[in-house]
Amino acid sequence: MCGIAGYIGPKVAAPVLTVALERLKYRGYDSAGLVTATADGLHLRRAEGRLRNLQEKLEREPVSGHVGIAHTRWATHGAPCERNAHPHLDGGCTVAVVHNGIIENHDHLRKELQAGGAVFASETDTEVIPHLLARLRRDGLDARASVRQACTLLEGSYAFAAIFADEPERILVARKGSPVLIGRSRPAADGSRELMIASDIPALLPHAQEMAILDDGDIADLRAPGTVEVEHDGAAKIPVFKRIEVTADAVDKGAYDSFMAKEIAEQPAVLARLLDSRVRGGRLVEPDLGLDLKAVNHIVFLACGTSWHASMLGKRFLEALARVHVEVDISSEYRYRNPVASGGTLVVAISQSGETADTLAGVRLAKSKFLPVVGLVNVVTSTIAREADGVLPLLAGPEIGVASTKAYTAQVLGLFLFAMQVARAKGLLPEAEELRLLAACAALPELVTATLADETAVVEAADLFAAAEATVFLGRGGEHPTALEGALKLKEIAYIAASGYPAGEFKHGPIALVSRHLPVIALCPRDAMREKMLSNIQEVRARAGRIIGVGAGDDPQLRDLCDLVFPVRSAPEDLLQPILSILPLQRYAYHVAQRRGCDVDQPRNLAKSVTVE
Ligand code: AGP
Image (tube, protein in one colour):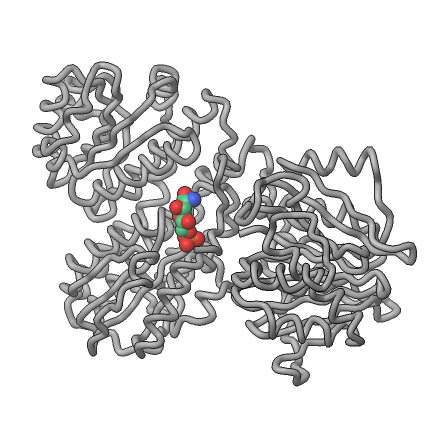
């Protein structure tokens, strides 16, 4: 986790860096800090807690300088206090470092450095890096050689940036296992460029128009007025700069009070964009995955969190349409097993960020077993996208709210289209069925718009149940993943103990939870499971539970049985209904969180991109 940023250019670095941190704070927000470099030395400012604390400190104690590095932290080693905030410096303030990742041999290095006289000021693993660099400089190495040598001694994962006090116009960057990008502006009339570094594209905006991705093992040397040299294994490497496609608007809240609210509202446009890229003349456009899908007889989905819920729906789609055997695996479990790798197996990694450490480790494990890997990712510049054999882009645009919303519905639709692609490759998708299913997909953006337009009952329920200590979500078939996802949303942004269950399983124990204090949210759209769900709702009602139904607004039986109904439109194809059913649950979590005074975009203890184990 954590986000790092850096700037070299004609502007005052501190404001540029705080904007970059604003765009990276979804990666962690326990503390933030920056250092600038001038001929007078290194100027450090750090603050515990939210970024605004750092901004206020900078207003009280501004720093000059046109070169700087910055960090927003999600604590791993050491409490989230100012002492442990980055940047970290060596005792003599000769070098400052920001770091994303974990230095696994920090204990050993710390003892060795302490034995040589280093005095540590924090409990972080990161602090070994500036002490190490300072020692290597004292041993006579130049700045770049000291970074090169340090990388041979550091174990674990990192993207770090360093500034040396005696070279205030230069930033050195190294990557192994954690993402980092180099951005640069278009050349000015005199050929100079502004340079940036960042953990993610949004933080490069609006100063950089082009970016290059560093690979593991790369060391980049950035110098004013705009040169970038990269080396790999000691040999020079030409960085490949590409135009940045994301606009600054896409990473702005606009008129919304939160990114989560904006991203929920964007869902019709996101689904329409994905369909636009995958359907031509009513027929499915098949991205080239470099694979013979006809030969695939076993698919393993790897994912975490919300992406894991999407993959549960992917299993249903593939089994229904392509009759392929599918396993859904939580990445952090898969990576520590010795999974069987048989011929005909395809691994599909699902990840919004494309940087989730456990999913990436699963991808690498699969590849080490010579299994082909497809990545269903939103961030196409991510490590998973680059390491997978084939990529299915979600095109959802930057998702900044920690709670995934638009990426989830895009994942579900993306998986549906993938299932159609596999079915077609296997000769199991007659043209008429393909046309019918794509017509059902095409109806989704409008149905999503209509469902989102009616949130009266959601607001009423949030008023009634915001103080509840627990909430249960029930669903059957395709709505079981919806129940899990609805519960996850409520847990992560409203801090309510929420659980999702397959409704048929509820009576095997969890029904003991039911009392008049427990809201039970029952997913009961007009699909093949409706009758069964109505029976399950009766079971809760018979025990005095408070029931919120999620289903057709004009379903009289549902209205009779429930205290409230969140109305959702009916999808023309049952398999697609979960895309609609999740919408009021996203909004419910949002409204409950607001009533409980929670920060929906930056919930406590979390970070969006989980790049540590
Ligand atoms: C979603 O609301 C969560 N914040 C989280 O579960 C997330 O889905 C998970 O960490 C996986 O992230 P990824 O899709 O970027 O791999």
